[in-house]
Image 1 (cartoon, one colour):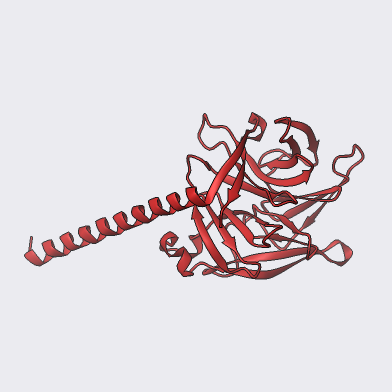
Image 2 (cartoon, helix red, strand yellow; image 1 turned 180 degrees about the horizontal axis):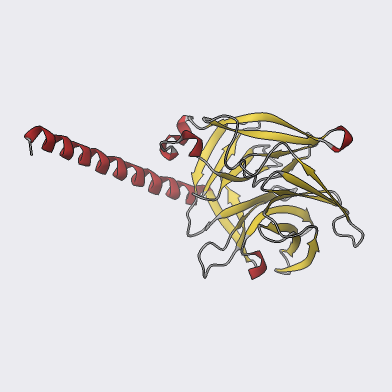
Length: 287
């Protein structure tokens, strides 16, 4: 082997080693920073029926509405009694990912963009309607949140979006004749400096976002990633303020996010490992 080739190989190995060391050092530092900023103050272990919990929403005093990605049911979980107190069927089996509760009605988003409206959802004579939004299965929609100030829903595609270098937060609202209007409102730049360490060869794959919610106190938009657990804090205008790398031992696969009216934050985690258990954790964010 020529000496030049040997030097090239040694240089490449050194570069790869340094890059890997730098990445893992930053990752460790970010996880440590997150443990300081995010504190779990309470944990609720969910029943096996919610091992695949995919979305949560504050429903009423002490009640969190949950959906999972297999059954067309809403599970009402009481955080005082530590149990599911009501199961509400609204559709056949399907990949249900996001849920919002607006007064007496519940709204559930299927991953292909089909939005279910369950009017008087806790009543025996509830009515179920479904509407196709502008999204489809390629977008893989996993999020839904009701913005009470703007009277619209917001969501963000987990996978394909219109642009390779950004992910849009969309407003979804009911229009005329049963049609739903979808409008891109905020843009998360995948090339932002705050996301540099998470970028790979495909910029579009920098983040695979699983849920979002608006903090009622600060009006910040908080966005979760479940695949490689992260929590993004965005300003009300959609600008990145902070990115927290979540510890997988505490957040196995964060898929659900909601706030109580007084600003308590709750994150739902899928069971993750085969012998794992899904949970809801109440988290305090020290900014």
